[in-house]
Amino acid sequence: MYLYHHPDVWYDYATWHAKNGSTDSAIKIFQRAVKALPGSEVLKYAFAELEESVGAIQPAKTIYESLIAENASMSSLAHIQFIRFLRRTEGIEAARKYFLEVRKLPSCTYHVYVAYATMSFCLDKDAKVAQNVFEVGLKRFMQEPGYVLEYADFLCRLNDDRNVRALFERALSLLPPEESVEVWKRFAQFEQIYGDLSSMLKVEQRRKEALSRTSEDAVSSLENTLYDVVSRYNYMDLWPCSSKELDYLSRQEWLAKNMSKKADRSVMLTSGGGSTSDKGTVGVGANAKLLPQSTKVVRPETSRMVIYDPRQMKGPVISATSSGYTKEVDEIFKMLSPPLMSFITNLPAIEGTTYLLYEYSVSSDA
Image 1 (tube, one colour):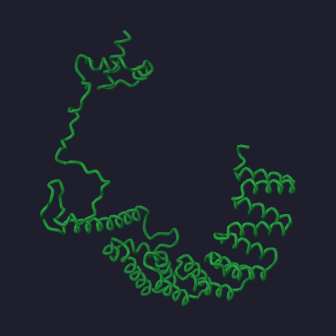
Image 2 (cartoon, rainbow, N blue to C red; image 1 turned 30 degrees about the vertical axis):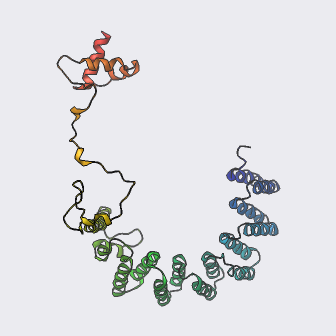
Image 3 (cartoon, rainbow, N blue to C red; image 1 turned 180 degrees about the vertical axis):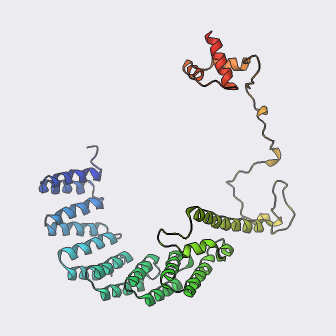
C-alpha cells in the first residue's frame, strides 16, 4: 500500500465507516492504523475520541494511558488531555487526584498547571482552587514568562489589579532582561488599560530602561517618539492615526534604530585615529587589527575597478545604420530558429533593433 504510512488516509477511511453506521469497522481500522503508525499521536487521540463517543470509556482510557507511557519524558499534552478526559468521564475528584500525581513528576511543565487551574475556574466555578494552583506553580515556574502571563490573565478575570501588579513586579525582579520582553509589554498594556497616566508613563519608562541594557540601540530606545504615543493609545485594531501615518512612523522607528547601530559601528572603526593602514580601507584606524576579521568575506580590489561602459563589451554589436543591418546582424539571424523568426515578424514594428529584425525577415522572405 503506497498510502500505508499516511495518517490522514487512515483517518478518512475510519471516519467514512463511522459516518455510515459501521462503528465496529471504524474501530478495527483505527486499531490497524495505530499499529502501522505507532508514533502518530493524533491518530491515537482520534481513536480515543471514537471510543468515548460510543460509550467505550475503558478502551478510551487505555489509549490515553498508552500515550502517556510511550512519551514519559515529553507527555505534558497527554497529561492535560487525560485530565480533561477524567473530568468528563469520572468527575472532578478523579481529575484532581491525577493532577496531584502528575505535578510531582520532574517532566511536568507549567502547561499542566495552567490547564488544570483554568478548568477548575471555568468549569468547576472554583476560583480559590484555581488561584491556589497558580500560586503553587509560581514557586516552580516563576522564570517562565508564559506562566506569568497566564497567571496575570487569570488575576485580571478576578478584577484583582493589586495582585496583578505584584505578580509583574515579582516576575520582573527575577527574570533576566532578555527573557522579560513579553512580560514588560503586558505590564505596560495593563497600565495603559487599567492604570492612571502617571503609572502608565512610569512603567513605560522602566520598560525602556530595562530593555535598553540588552539591545544595541540603547540610546535610541530611551528616547520618546510619536510611535510610543500611538502604541499607548491604540486599542485592538483601532489606531489613533491612518494606515499611511502608521507605516511612516514604523519606518521612522526602524530607521532611527538602524542609524544608531551604524553610528556606533563607525565610532568603533575610527576610534584608533586618522591614520590608515591600507589605502583601500577608509575610516579604519590604527586599532583596526583589534576588530574581528572574517575569513569568509571576499572583498573587491577597488584599485582595479573601472567605470562601466557598454562599448567595452566584447562580442558582436548591433548598430542601427541607414543600410538596414550589418554582417553581425546577419550572423545572428542565421542562428535563429524558424519559430523564433516567425514570432519576431509578428511583433509591432518600431524604430531600433526590432525594426531591423523585421526588415531583415521581410527581405529574406522576398
